[in-house]
Image (cartoon, rainbow, N blue to C red; front, side, top):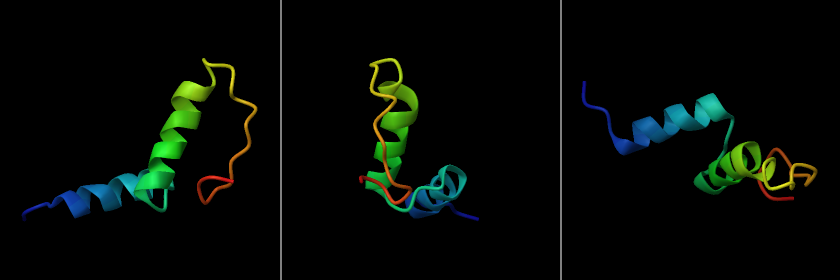
Length: 50
């Protein structure tokens, strides 16, 4: 079986709960960078940017 980039993206989206590449970037930023920067209180919707 040959896996494509699209297959890998589908897997990442499923595991992270992201709906798009932009949503994935936003989730990664807020989950991993916003806290240490003191931006953890910024609200975001589950669909991406508020």
